[in-house]
Length: 212
Picture 1 (cartoon, rainbow, N blue to C red):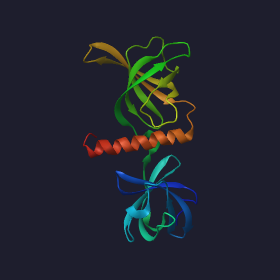
Picture 2: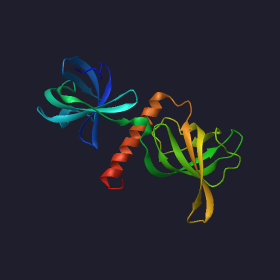
Picture 3: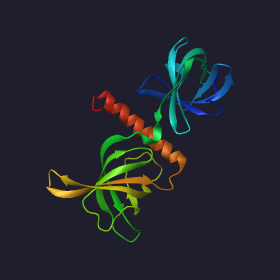
Picture 4: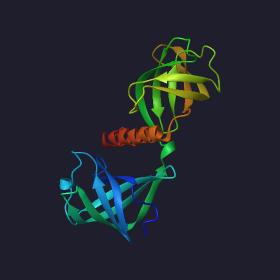
């Protein structure tokens, strides 16, 4: 049974972990799914009849994967029929998957204050860990505005709330620094999913290079 999928649902199809194509479910029939691929790049020419692919989808904040076999290809409509092979595999809670990064950001506590620089040490679908040089009045529960250019969002400014503060020693400057854990505040679900997708993409890159 295909109880985790529905018509109109967006999914991803891959031949390899690093090669993904976006598609939408346009029909269901028992163990068979009809997919239509998005965009000019994502054409059905990359698949062959009888080929085993991996279908990925999001449900209840978790990532699920399913092996499918290509049954028929409709090049005219940029679609294909696939048949499920086995059952879904639940990978992990996507929100809590973190990826280590080193990205410079700017932050400030209020609209009137000036931006200060910080470094993002890791990020997940729920928040980030930021290293800053001084607290300057920041404490647990403080809400700050973060400006960044590396996230795949339509905006570059997001609101976060401080949920954890850890004092550390900077080995290079021999000064105390602060690692601040923050959670995203009032972030639309679609933006959270975009961050999560970005996190998984970066995680796959690091694994491919043997970094994690």
